[in-house]
Image 1 (cartoon, rainbow, N blue to C red):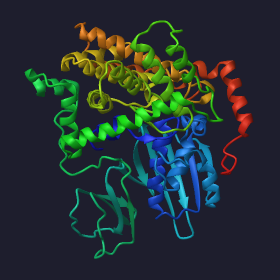
Image 2: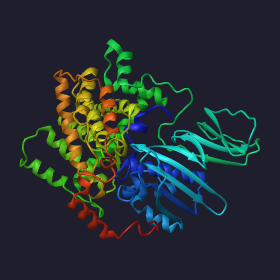
Image 3: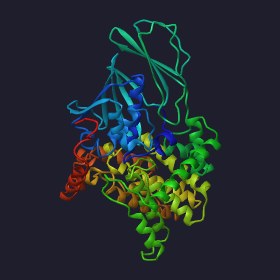
Image 4: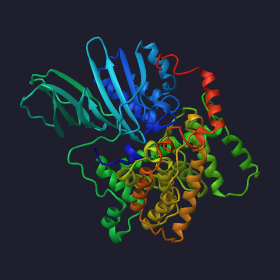
Length: 515
């Protein structure tokens, strides 16, 4: 797997849907599956392991919406995504979804069997958090594919000799044949080989992988050692990291993050103006908060009130299938950008400073993703909300002109206070208590940023805090890791809300014929 990228793994994707690990990741898996079939799919069987998270969440948390959109070849922010089930039916693509007992070790495992008049193929892939994926198997052949390369899959007679100009060539045994997996910046041409079949799977990540990729550091400890006494601002270290990871110039990195900031500011405005969506637990509330804040009818929270407003607005945009940015995930999409944009505006700072703060946050996210995960299905909400709080704390210190070490201290302090947070979405929707947890993460970030600016001692280095969160997750019951089988998700009121929502739209997907 390629090293973590700020724009692949941490700040992004730009998407629609309630959950990045469900919707955006499923869409990317569907796109690769579509390429495996050369874009011609007549039937799809989707299988979810009974012991995983997907049997209870695939419909309500956006896996179906994303997967269907991917099978249709759409992008993650396509405005048609909420109607992807109907579009799939209109395309006359037959679909079945079944729960099976396969004992898959990862809770977000997708098993697809795809058919058309000429061929049948299978694909097994996992969603690893924040929209990132890994393909584990194609047609029974174990391999690894993260969507960062142009992948040319060539079936050849065993013993075939050939040399490709490519970043990497992996030869897999496939019965009496071999499957050559050729990774490169473009597809390769096997014209002079006795190819039995050739498949071309296009990249699905915005920052491509490449040969001999080298990054300056992979952990917070390594970064501090490399930078040493220079005390380079965290945002500048983030630029250096992403320039090395993505082969970008500094101007390109800054431009990419500025574009994301502008998307987020537009989403905040649309959220405050008002959003609606039928299959939704909480309806528009941020507008009333804005009205009462402007009237002076709320308790004086200073800039925190503006942060709360922006966080709630972004969560409402997510819940109405509007455009958001997973930062680091869709379920935790609001804490970081809401805190950064609101605080920057309160301080009279421009988009340049917002961009720098988001980059600083992105580098903290790199350290988390490299050591662990953003997936609540693996780590509970501490993996999403905890990471968002940690990233936001470093970003706020950056806005205040704090030092590299103060930003790192703030990140550690914020993450420490979020350990053990479970994932228990009410009515099986990523809305509540997700809204409150995003607000809590942002408020925690502000508090820890100020503590770090006053040189409070975090005691535990950030890398060790991340490792501690991972250790906590390994002991967390499955029911408390985004399965809707524990906590608030199984309260009588939550179950009643879920029944009411189901009665409004009927059972299952309806138009796609799955069960």
